[in-house]
Length: 180
Image 1: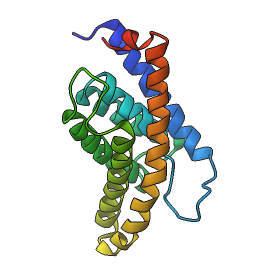
Image 2 (image 1 turned 90 degrees about the horizontal axis):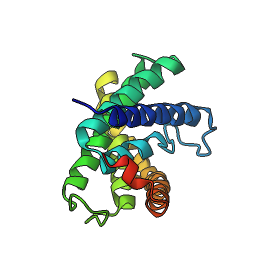
Image 3 (image 1 turned 30 degrees about the vertical axis):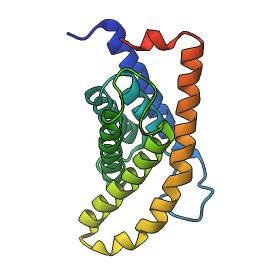
Image 4 (image 1 turned 90 degrees about the vertical axis):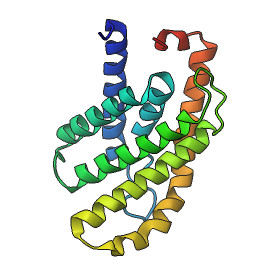
């Protein structure tokens, strides 16, 4: 049985992830490299992994990608499959790295910044793997070094934003409200 408070918190996180997903689509890409994005919705994914568990984070990721794609008109097209595969790959790796950390502590063996950068790299790798499947050609992996290089600043930025959000929630005493 899921408590009403937990369900409401998950719904708010899904809504926030969708808003970030849609907002990011409106931002002009400052890089001349196709496919490079900030990954703002991954902040919510990593937040869900930290506050809840991997099952909840996967639920949020699935709902965010499906509903966000539905709202942006990209459901079941190439952009959807690239987004979905990248989000699942990122969530898998970030969940694995967080499993290696102590359970009830915010002192991770891997910093949130490192986990976020690894998640961004996994997202890009997942997208390229899906692209290779869709176009039936592995030549797309020549793009991998550029995508991995772009995951360092984007993953660092999203990790930094999440770290500051967690620090704010903890210092304001609101973090306990999320830990259900």
